[in-house]
Amino acid sequence: MKKLLSVTALMLSGSVLAQTGYVGGGLALVDYSEVGVSDEASLTAIYGRLGTNFNENFSGEIRVGLGLGSDTVFIDPLGFDADIKLNNLFGVYVKGGVPISDALFPYVVLGYTRGEVEASALGSSSESDVSFGIGADLAISDSVTASIEYMNYLDQEFAEVGGFSLSIVTKF
Image (cartoon, rainbow, N blue to C red; front, side, top):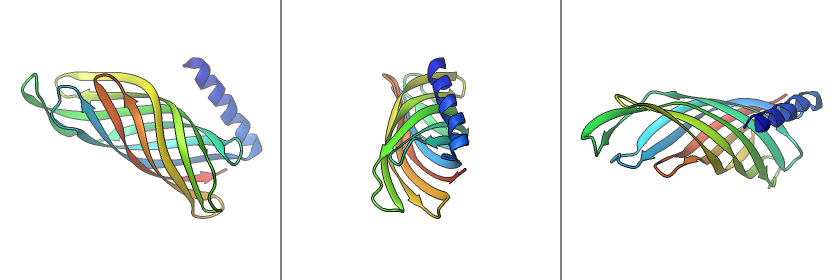
């Protein structure tokens, strides 16, 4: 993991000199499901993105997110309700796609995410997993892009986190 972060930091620092970087933020609406929990928790997070374009088809980025609020679910084996909260998400990703026009860029994304979820009375747990998704960038201007995306952030044996997000990025 440390090597992956070091390589990503070097890629991003080089992009600043080449003027191919971008920065932005977004809102993610994710579902959290866990074995033994009768309902999915619907959670909201805000996140920041920092990335670099390697060429017109590929880019790499780092995302850091913080959960907003919580959702109440019923814990079957224990017989009580619990508030579920997404504390944070951190990920490193590579995006690849083919521009359809000057304004539309559909893509797939692959990476690695670490997230922390907290349940009232049960504490918090952190998980890491390979992440993947699909999305599209829509150019608003020469330097501003809007994105819509579906990501499967974590898919462990006992828990899953995934959902839709909307974001805005600007080139620098």
